[in-house]
Image (cartoon, rainbow, N blue to C red; front, top):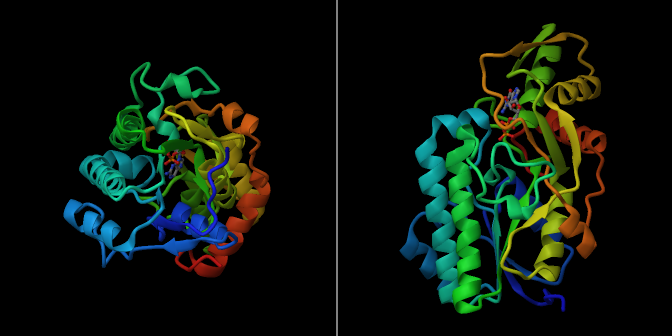
Length: 316
Ligand code: GDP
């Protein structure tokens, strides 16, 4: 039986982030009351504050889209922020939600929670079967803890808490900072600026051979709302079904969209990270959901937004 969202008070923790923002846009089409807490008003790392906020605002449904996120360089550079802050945010929100008796809670994992050399495509059962990729282990460990905490609350107390593992996401609202961002936003910015400034070379980290699967963020938000309604089990479920490309292919597609005719220089002393992380999306596909935006279309929309706003603006 589908979970009925109608008339519910839905708290999107992390509504200013790329995923949280897309969820708010998607839920704008539903008959729900959206709850959000501004960062200045509520620090999710402080347990007592989170408990007080949840008691005062009484959500029925909670989605934890809040996290310290970043690309391969940021992950490696700020291990404490990625591990401690994320552990704190997630445990505080899960605990406060349980104590307030929320009807439904969704934790978001990440494809980096799976082992570095997992068999591809990566099924949900692969979790915790082998070592992690070191560059993003801090984020991965915090996300594994969150997935397991949702599972623990379901197992011990029967709460209707679930966890979802989205594949790599991108889109308007992404972080376009070159040190902090993921590969799509970073390369989009580098290529855009090279073209604007008349430079004919762009640096790409690593060998260009790693493969990544990408889903457009508005598709992902639609998938998350679908799973809020239709998924209820102990195990995490992958939100996948995107297009897989190598970093080299991605750079070529971006060059075409942006109109850059220069060359790419591969900095092979920079880390590649996971060689491949294609998620198995068959479980969510069997439930009846798949993404619709092609990589080319999603990148084109994202670039349009970036070129208009410089990556800072609000997403319409
Ligand atoms: P990951 O998916 O967790 O590894 O995170 P990223 O999106 O940051 O990186 C994906 C891949 O793109 C890695 O192999 C990076 O080395 C590569 N890459 C190439 N150039 C860049 C860049 O300018 N920024 C980022 N973040 N990654 C890059």
